[in-house]
Length: 401
Image 1 (cartoon, rainbow, N blue to C red):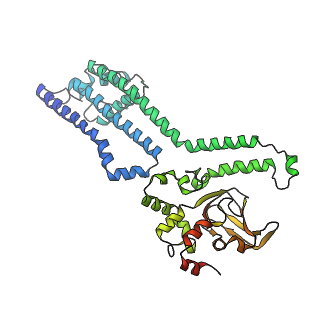
Image 2: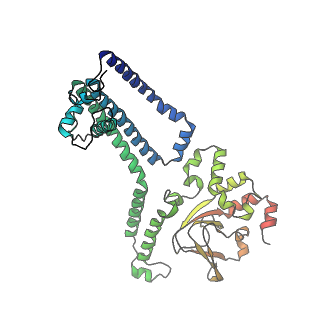
Image 3: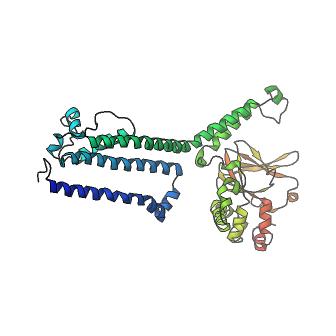
């Protein structure tokens, strides 16, 4: 057997049998999809990933794998022309000898020789990628009849395959940019709203309780921009809703137990900050029920707040931003606080005041001013009273009267 100039007929038959055996093993590749779906570890990893990014990685891996298989088979076609990767490969008619005679440069890639497997694979992969992507530089071309047959089939298949891949990649990339698109959409809607303002500067000067249109417009734009900045950029619209099921629609499709566990993981941290709502007095089921009644609120910089127009007073916990307590506001006057108290992230507000009825405050209500764009978890007073109605120890140990 001469490895440089081919092999005898018996060796050819053995090599052909081995090649066919190796190709038949590719049938097992069809099991990969089934195995990945049945693997708990792979499924768990997949579910934790960002869907758009995971799909993009999946498409790229499929493209790389397909390119590898085609490159190996393209190199094999040159091999069967002389049954050797030695010097005979450069003398017989095939795509490698044609490239070697027209494009080989001393010191560059050399696909001829048993030791040149990496260079040969690189050249085969180069042809495969340019064929799949329809680039076609023309320096690597088919020569033999078999090579032309294979190239024709590949061009037909790769045209459909590449169209499928491009369509899916564009869809995934578009999904990845949906956050930016939503921001632009909301900013355009805000600008349309501002253009519809009817009060002029002279009109606002005649009404001391109405801010200038330019000031309001600036506050609106900054409010919209703040919704898409900071740590909550992945879900910029969640605080435009109120209850948890509106914020996270997935909760509505879960079983009761899973819903309780999910709501606890979402809000239990903030409920525990309120002494009389902690696990010392409430069961986890009661906390989950209370968590489902929590409201997400958002405030712009400089905005003042006394109580919610629909849900009334309650406990607030800062998720983002900060605010200061200005004192009490009545029907006519504001009683300023002797010292301004600042609340920042994870600071509960109005913990004690919430336990008393409105009449106990004598017509006065706490007044707060937010110093930056703020996200707040609001626990309504009505929900607190409902869950504490039979909790005598909580009233005894935490109520201050």
